[in-house]
Image 1 (spheres, rainbow, N blue to C red):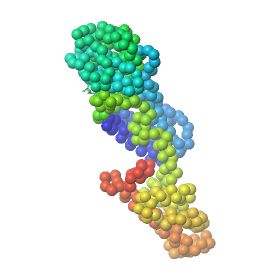
Image 2 (image 1 turned 90 degrees about the vertical axis):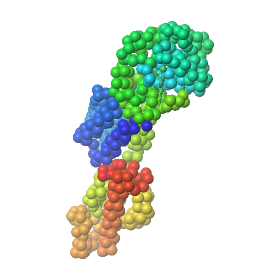
Image 3 (image 1 turned 45 degrees about the vertical axis):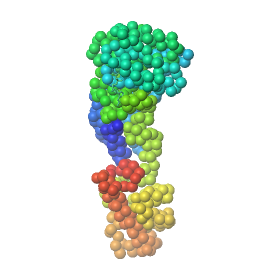
Image 4 (image 1 turned 30 degrees about the vertical axis):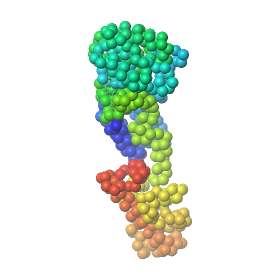
Length: 453
Ligand SMILES: Nc1nc2c(ncn2[C@@H]2O[C@H](COP(=O)(O)OP(=O)(O)O)[C@@H](O)[C@H]2O)c(=O)[nH]1
Ligand SMILES: [Mg+2]
């Protein structure tokens, strides 16, 4: 899978972000640094990395938000910046009906132009257009045959002249023929050029001049690294690039090249190639794509998930639990803040295999009312260190709160059960980390929000 490592890096950053107790200047700086590392190791051009992260940082630092919303906000900033870089909203190539539309594909040799010409032809043919392809590659031996063969597969007519050596002449003549034959869309292939080859770049410019295509598409090899930027830049200088197709994203592409090419041309990615076959072309949706990179296919869903998790359990408290610093008061407030005890029970039942602490059985709400009174009669030390509560203290608390030993003992029992329960929890998380039997399926997600997992 292309973008695999980058996706994983981003997901880790998001997880770290969600696990932070709060977002301040230092944490934003730390997140920005991680993000820079991720982008750099995905082979995104250095200047672009700094430009992107600077934008995120500025917005993150300068926007006043309630604490709880800031994490989501930073996630959203990262999301939006990535989407912006790769071209915002997907915009289909404008095809004017009742006219012949010419699409010109350019890019260096081996980037996948000829294959993509056939893929695009198939794509538009399936949409009901009359489509033709034109080959103008006079440089590469067998280029003509290659496109003839591909277009035969998809039953699309291929125009070209293997005996003519002048690419511009072929382009003009053959495209004219295709227009006269009443084709709606004519996709023109060009010879693979290197950005340094002046002669070839000139030829491409001339072809553009004489064909006046509706759109020039730059085909970029998705496996390219940082050099994608300068390559795309050179092409953008020579022709009016209208959009980008990134190929070979079925492989192990790091993806930085694609991001860089977009930035260099300021144009969006419209399609991606995901294989050698003619049907292996996908329309590109930036939002969906970035969502997947960030570890969640839909951004709204994640924001909600983060919020939900925070309602269910206060990460700060869970952290204290994991460190064994979980107090009686923590348990009380946590239970009190969970309006839907049922939901909490479901979650705990999933982890504990049905073995739910008594604190969360049916009478949880009733217990809470009693606990409140008991807690009010305790000292801070006792609440923090329930172990201190021995016989004499119990007596004092019972008298002070107007309750009895049973109530107090029960409360302490439940506290200890919960504590044990969370200890087990912690171990499951740890085992999961080492690849052993970890948390039950789906549960890891909830606990991504907490440190220590
Ligand atoms: N895996 C994979 N290979 C591709 C893709 N697009 C093109 N190729 C392969 O890349 C090589 C060069 O493609 P070609 O279309 O001849 O590139 P051109 O020189 O730019 O015309 C060929 O072997 C293609 O099969 C793609 O999306 N995925
Ligand atoms: Mg070719």
